[in-house]
Length: 100
Image (cartoon, rainbow, N blue to C red; front, side):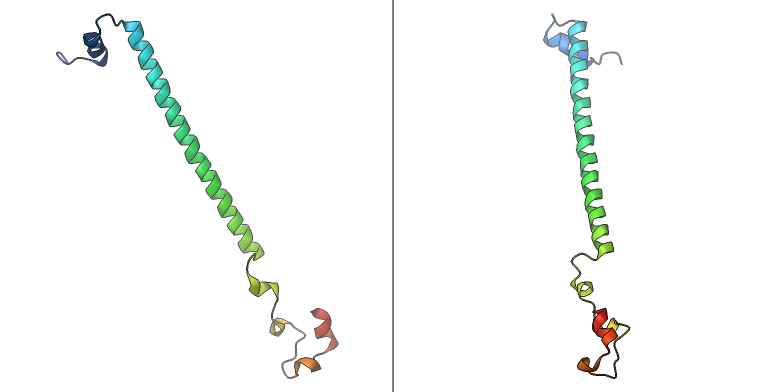
């Protein structure tokens, strides 16, 4: 790589009084900033995953418990084992009425 200036050489050309310690300190600070930003982005990604998992768990629990499903809130009388299809509603047995 003869003839191609490195970042350090570019800085030295812009400011000849710039020394190696200053260069390495700036390089260290820049790497630290990059690492901090990468860490923050990863934290944000993990937090979004946690929120999605919580939403998924809530949806799954709601589905298991039939929350929001009005059809199970008041079961049909036709699903009742004591309901006799041959009788009118006012002729149903006491067991039918007790089971409601």
